[in-house]
Length: 178
Image (tube, rainbow, N blue to C red; front, side):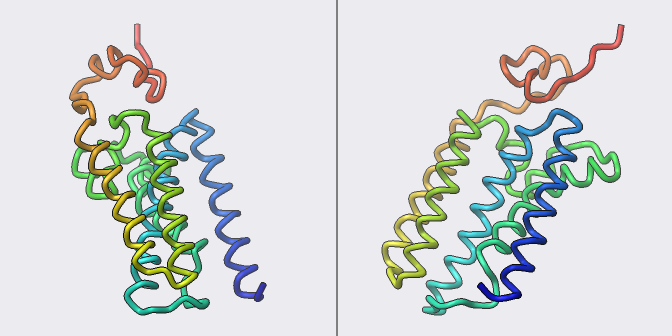
């Protein structure tokens, strides 16, 4: 493994660890994994598409570590704005990889794990010069996302709806002031 690869992996793992601790301080590990899996899948999908389009199977400028990490940062940007600056979530933040809607798809963590595994498989297929197979697996991952979004529950528009939502109140606790 090259020196650059070691440095890249170390920086990515360290930053991911810091992010995880930041989420954990709020009891929001669910959000770390949800946006990490989907963001990582987006980064890997982008890298896979570049590898297919340029017919490059060897090492390139971007590594899967870096691509997945950049996808995670993109997907979690609204959370980073909240953690760092107290910026509250609003619906326009869905521009960042369906940041709000993703919480309301069926079985969000299992679904995003499946999408991540599919994109990882597509990347592996691209690396062994199987572009058509890689494209087919990426298409399957995209289909899973589209179907999950089609079955997403409506987004709550009030604190009371969040409290009344079965399970969402556990994932996004809203304190009660009495």
